[in-house]
Length: 253
Ligand code: CA
Image (cartoon, rainbow, N blue to C red; front, side, top):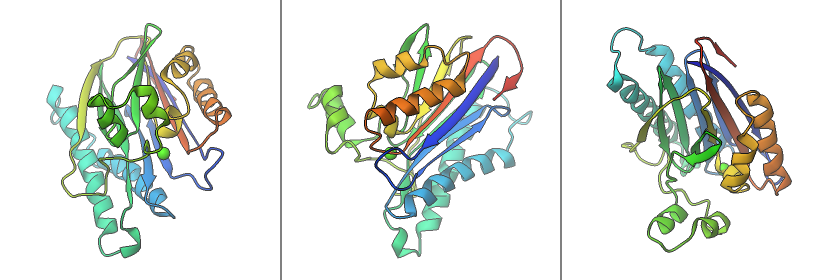
């Protein structure tokens, strides 16, 4: 399947620095967003370490030929995220000023006719298929736990003062648990990876509307999403990666 992809990140309107990082490697079919936390420069360091570690893992283990098959891509994506976590934990140990440093990560690996998705934290992956938006990840956040237990509605969670509390992140413990999912890919599918600076500013129906024409122009979709997040307040850094699939065989970005 042919894919077109684009990524963009913006500091937003309230923050002084951007602690998000992203990865777009259309040739390899590897995409990721990481949203750092921990204050000062720490968040910026953690999200960059996560992205560098993912890239480094797949550079070292391209995974072609040796171990093909359904299990392989899932296993490699998990190993890549585990390796990223280890790098961040190592970067923290012995540095008192880095205590509390961490990052979310969402990653999508396009593997033949499916997408393998891994995530830790509250960055998200959405899929727009046949004009309808569906969320493919479940936030590791305090508000989402309340939603799951029926104590909060989705709408209330979106506005809740504790919406930034993440319950799972890279860098907080050595044995991180990675949520993994597989999604069969169809021509016309558009995947969106984003940091919470997008989805705390935009409800899903607004994201859906702005993604409608993303298949033709991923860069335009990225720009529109960021502009809309900023127009609605831009309270956080906002990062988006759009991956659009179509019939054919070439990759372009
Ligand atoms: Ca954020």
